[in-house]
Image (cartoon, rainbow, N blue to C red; front, side, top):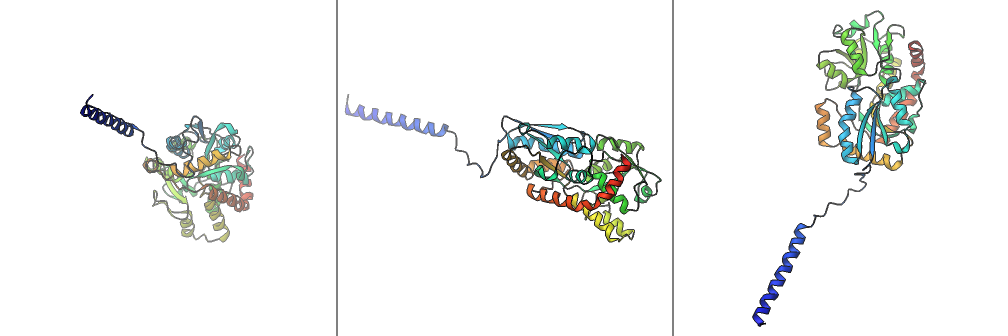
Amino acid sequence: MSKKFKLLLAVMVCAVALFEVGCNQNSAQQPTAPAEPGSYQGHFKGKTLTIIVPFSPGGGFDIYARLAQPFFKEYTGAAVVVTNMPGGGGLVGANRVYNARASDNTIGILGGGNLVYTVIGGVPGVSYEIDKYQYIGRVSADPTTLVAGNQYDTLDKVLALTKPKWAVNGIGEADFYNGIILMRALGKGPYDYDVITGWEGTSQWFSAITAGSVDFGFVSAGSSYIYHEEGNCEILLQLDYERDERIPDVPTIFEVLQERGITDEQILKKVETICNIHMANRVFAAGPNMPAADVEALKWAWEKIAQDPAFLASCAQANRPIAYMDAETLQEALITGASNGLALKPIFDEQIAIVQ
């Protein structure tokens, strides 16, 4: 073999070797970015996460849960199921979440005010303690609104009625307790209206308002805004310190009281108390049996979801704004609300006795 041929063969071997190395480098998977510190991405992979909605389909709680459903799947890796469990104004679903087993992977979208008021009111059937829920974070801070049929285009027309019919999902919901204090502040006593309970959800009694079989009710601004836009109700006041941007023409309870010359400090203090409690409007929470690592994973996921542009866009499209609050701040607010709300217990007890 000539030296020239040997040299040519060596060059070819080297070229092939370099080509193979290059191909291997080009076909190799690009390195992924290191995981975010504290990330729980995919923590529930291969498992099913159940979100309990304590009301029937179609209401605000249900809509928020279903908007969040695909994003919980994205951030936790779980197959996510939304289950409606109405009854008792949210009480049945709240009990189910609280008593879930560690292996159930169950959370709920619950009414923070519902939890506070049912404990204060000593509502029969409550099997939970506020400070033993494991909170994941706040979802929304929708103000409560007073809504009435289209025939009542002013608050005065509702207040002038003799024994109007007030629709209430059940004595387990915050809107019932908010309504008691608001009606007292407006000069109405516990026998001045008939409380009609037993509805499975807001959508059901809204149909009754449209039909004229009940006169008024209290519900979140998110729900009342939608029904008002559809021409099915009038929104007459809102429980908040400032007007909600979706209903800028509806006065706050504080504006209404000022217009009516109601300046009694005890009345104002009661209204302020329920306004502060209602700031924990809708919350995600787990029961005390869920493992700590799972709870931390869900806190992490909800914080990410609440900042996700796609999620926020879908909420905006549905007129369901997000008002995120972290779990620790939320728990402190609920416990403080329960403590301050104890002063209202005699008023609640009186109304509950009449309803039952």
